[in-house]
Length: 258
Image (cartoon, rainbow, N blue to C red):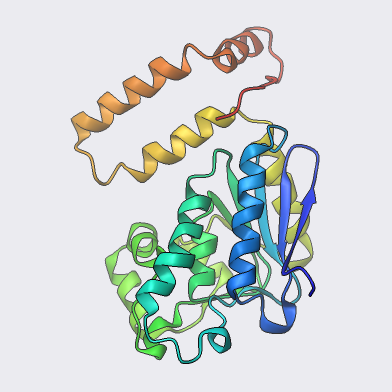
C-alpha cells in the first residue's frame, strides 16, 4: 500500500505532503496515523526547526474521508481518537508551522490549516466550512479558530452557510496570512518555513502560546505571563546572540529550540 503522505526533509525544516490526490487528500485512519508519526519524528529531530504542510494534486485537504467512516454514528469518538489528538499535536509542536493551501481546503482540512502558525494560500484556493451541509458543527478546532480570526458575525455566516471562501477574501478577512499567485506558492511557503527555521524557535513557540491564551487572561494576567516568559527567555543563549548581533549590526545565528 502506498504511503498516504511524503516527508521531505529540507535544510532546517521538514516539508510534509499529503499524498492522496485522488481523494483530495481527505483523511482516513492510515493518513491520521502517518501524520501523527511524522509530527512525532519532526518534534524529536533537533535539526528540524520548522514544519511545512501542503497537499499533492489540486487540493490541500478535504477533511475527513466520508467513505472511510460510512456507517459510523459515534462521530464524537472518531474526533476524540483521531482529529483532536492530531490538531493538538500540530498546535503544540515545539517548532513553528506553515500551511501552504494549494487548492481545496474543506471541513477539518480548514481546521488543520488554521492549526498552523502561518497560512499561505494559492489565489485559486478555496476554503469550505461545510459542516452544516452534513448537519454537523465545526470541529477539529474550527469553532475555536473561526471567531478569533474572523469575528463572530463572519464566523457564524461562514459556518451556517458553508459557502466557499476564496483565498484573497480569506486574506482580507484575516483568516489566513497571505494569498499568493499559484505559481509562487511553493517558493513563498518554503521561504517562510526557512525564515522561521532560522529564527529563535523557543521564543516563537512561546509567542504562539502567549497569543493563543490572550483572550482567556485579564490584561494584568497577560502582563504577568509576558514578564515570566521574558525572564525565562532572557536567560537563554539565543537572547545573548540576538543582542550581540544587534550591536554588531549583523544577522543573528540562533541555535536554540523548544
